Amino acid sequence: MKHPLKVIQLYKNEAQLINKAVRNNREAQHMLYELHAPKMLSVCRYYIKDLQQAEDVLLNGFFKVFTKIKHFKNEGSFEGWVRRIMIREAISYLRQKKQIEFVSDAIEIHEEQTNNIKAQIDVAEIQQLIDDLPEGYRMVFVMYAIEGYKHSEIADLLKISEGTSKSQLFKARKLLQKQLQLLNTTSNGTN
Amino acid sequence: MAPIKFENDIKEKLEQRGLQPSANVWKNLEKQLDASDKKKNNKGFWWFGIAASFVGILIMTTVLFNRDGAKDIESVIVDIEAVDKPGSTVKLSDSTKIEENVAVESVKEHNLIETKKNSQKNTSELKVQVQQKQKILIKGTVKEVVAQAEIKHEKEVKDVVKLNTDKLSFEDIKIQEIVAQVQALKEANNTVSDAEINALLDQAQKDITMHKLYNEATNKVDANALLEDVEADLEQSFRDKAFKAIQSGFKYVKTAVADRNN
Image (tube, rainbow over all chains, first blue to last red):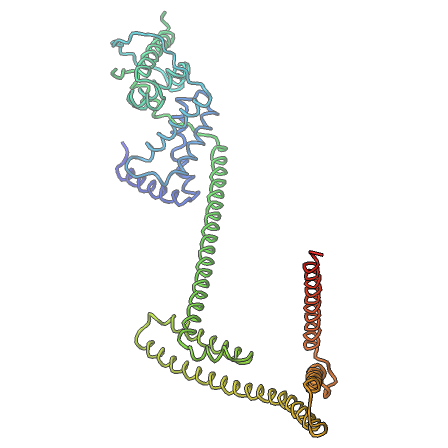
């Protein structure tokens, strides 16, 4: 567990850095970048398969962060604000590349009591599973399951209907469970 | 749709992950930020330029408008002066060029002082006192100027009278000569005919015109007088010609009417 004093110190430091970054202090901007870039690249990587492209999105996202930093109000966490910018940037990047396809097969959505599959796999494998999902499935799944957005918010951000968002999530889950079961069986050596 | 347990595991594991971006990312970001700063500075420069030009235009317009206003006031004052000082204007209307110049000077002085007065309208009582003093000064200057003008006018009048007396004296001499000649003729012949008197008068008139045309003292011919003389001759000749033509035409018509029955 983190020491509370250390957390307060970090918060104070970040607030100071933000104030300096607002005044266009390049060093403070660099420090903020160093502090948040690894996490934000990971977020970008959820949505974008290619690391190089994810870095491009990261760059554009941070450019927006530093040019709009004066609009940041200390109401929420700075990390959360930066994260929202990164997600929006990733979505717009994919939209520009026209890589988003929402397969709208008429699937009857019903609550499926999924078994307690425990992900006995490492992060690289999880990322691989997510990468293997079709673009539309992946975006909705990441936004809902990992970022914690509601369907209404996803629909608004991706400019789709809530129904589409729900169906995409359902399909993504089904596909992932299937893949996960496959991975578990192969790793356990049982067929 | 409730979150599924494996999704929570995935989330936990992914949240703990950190991917270190390559060094180029920051370098490129720094470049982009520098470029945007330059753009911002340029924007500021342009805004400063626009603001400066706007202020310049504002100053120019205010200066120009003020100038126009001053001109208007001046013209109004001139009118008031003309009304306030009818005596001076009457004198000026009769006066020569010199007097006009004097009058213009006096008006200018008035204008200057009046503009000063107008500029001090909204000031305190002290300034009003100053204005009164100025008015006294103005009156003093006006009196001086008018006095000077009057002196000059008197001089001018004297000069004109002198000139007139000179001219009259030559004509008087001529008249006296004619009277003497008529008296001599009377004494010699007892009677003097109208033709003789007319001849003497014509001769005297010619002498006077010659005197006007040719100044013996300076050996100079007055061009204007010569021109007037010639024009008078021309007019006279034209009048005579026209009269003769009418006379002959009338005779022709008269004979034609008289001989119509023959």
